[in-house]
Image 1 (spheres, rainbow, N blue to C red):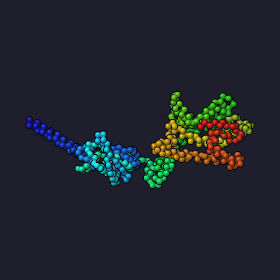
Image 2 (cartoon, rainbow, N blue to C red):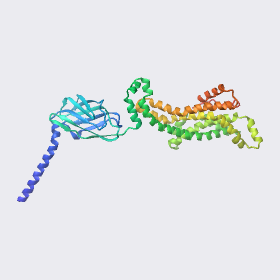
Image 3 (cartoon, rainbow, N blue to C red):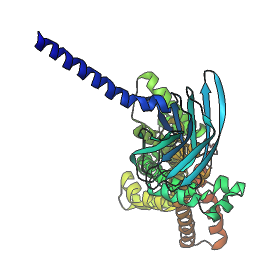
Image 4 (spheres, helix red, strand yellow):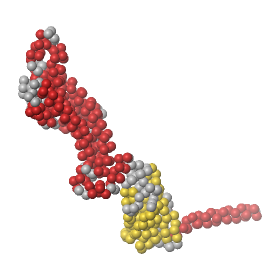
Length: 445
């Protein structure tokens, strides 16, 4: 019996000691006003190196008022431009709190005037904190002060992604004095914002590669389509000519934008589904094939009939005469016009952005929407010009050489041809010489 009483005594003593230990842990929170379990933190930027807004929310309890909070940010944080504000909520009553923010290195001290009363919800917002470039999980620690002393805040973690090299360059540019002066001019800021140029270049680069990929596949496919259609249109069989003419007139008589919509939204309705890239290549190839057909037809018909008769006199068949005599001369004559068609088709890849293909224009549109600035479109224009300007110049020189080799008088003819190439002579399919028949002037693109 005596042993049982001793065991019960030890059990009561253990329970009392556990209760005292628990009270020793809870008492500071009850007395000094910050609810550690209810303290939360949010940020408005997910990439490091940006000016970030930190929002701290907590509840005060106990009997002590909170005089201020001292936040300690991760190493590498820039707090030189920090500002802060605070509000309290008691029941349904919201009150602004006058605060004074003091930054020292990575520490920001926020003092309240008057102090925050217990039994209220406190929200502190710290603005313009430039977080470190290092990505991953970071933490904010600190202390809060009451009349009775200083107490630790709970550890508050957040995660940010590391910025890319172009983003780091953009962040650096945005803080330079000469960039701020440049951006103070509205038109320069809207179209030539330096930091957005630095950020847009790598983003748009991958869209540019996709645009090049589309044209690099579509145009070689369009060449045999155009050549075959040109022969069909010159056929002696009327039904064959009608089919070729219908294809050419329908494609040239309707906008490429409409053809893209029919392919991407119409074909799935009848059960025909293709991945976006092959379908985009198909639409571009079919469209360009109609224009190339007229270019080849005009080129073939521009060759003097004596060339064909001479080939036949040497014993060549019709196919041999075309393959070894007519077609080589035709390609030589229409090559400048084919290059102009290539340039125009490359620019037309931008229309595929309307159906969600992430080529150059789609990437530029997303970048402009995210930044609220159209500088990304200027960068996209430069990417297009990197392809088109060299080709335009090459076409001009090639036409000049062809004019000289055919005995043209020189610069006036060459200038006329160069001007025609720049204005889109591929769409009109002008014959290389006056011997060709009058081209169809329908232009639906």
